[in-house]
Length: 414
Image (cartoon, rainbow, N blue to C red; front, side, top):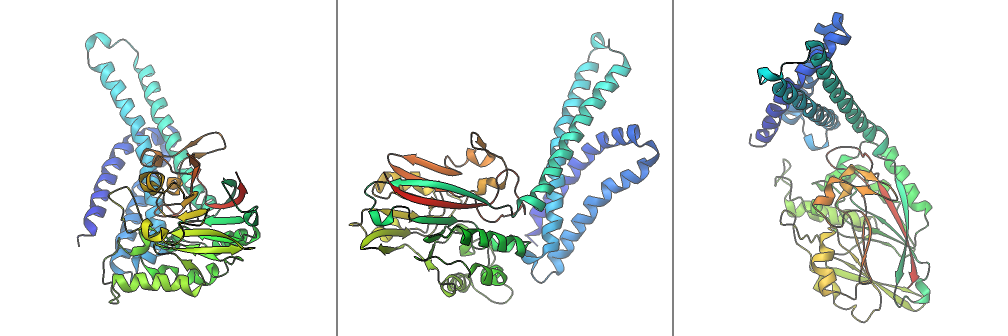
């Protein structure tokens, strides 16, 4: 029952917002569709009511709500409506403040009523247009953005890079979140795009699932196609441990069993899962060290299971070292301070918040206010950090602005 309390609180807030925005909605429908106001008013309230009842029914009666596509789509549409109406609410409040100021003193009552109504209609209409545009963007982000994979090409110039690794090609993906996928065909296209890059090695930097290992069952065959001459290396992300799920589950599976199955999935696919350990790639008699740690975050709300000192042991003598660590906050909090010999760290986690502006010359997302390094390539004192935008999505099943990413790195000597 406790799991429904946050949901019920959200519904209360949603309907309070809905009621406020409804005043502006009525103003516009009376002006533009006077003969259809009863029907339009019914539709306004019917849509959220049906969505909420669907969500509640699915959570109660579905054998596995977390994998229910009905729940995902209902929640996504409701979330989109909430965001759009919240934006409209801002305009409604502005309109009410303007009217309150205008009529609060008798000395100010000089403007004709017609002008006041025109101003009010303009503000409310502007709010409706903004809300409609925002909702349309969120819908488009699901239909077209979720699997619109973008290839980002980067050159990494490393000091003392052996000639054998000049031009060595690395492909990185991150944050698959397989429990959120709604299009297998879309995922297959992404996997083929990775293979088309002909990588020498593939890095996966965590969050294969949202919470449970069985989310990956129906996608295992697809991801098993990922192959590279020098292998696929992976690490665990904060979602892979099952920390956000109640254990044991309905089938009696424990948290430990769930994590082991997730590790077995990667073993079965031939991936090299690095759990606070390292692996050495040898090419033409030269060596490149790959280090991988469990989730390590500088933020208290995320786990700190990683042990870089353990992963570092045994590769001190190797000139070039590449680190896989899911959370980008690890770079500034520990790597830069204590491990200057690590050339580059590969991370994910932020997703670019799946929303924002992502151009060659300007990048913005709300996540930047939480993570100083949140998307693309960073360099400090000769050490690199790359934050991948993510392959999948979480929560909102789409992307607006920050599209899913496949990163292709080419190593060059500095």
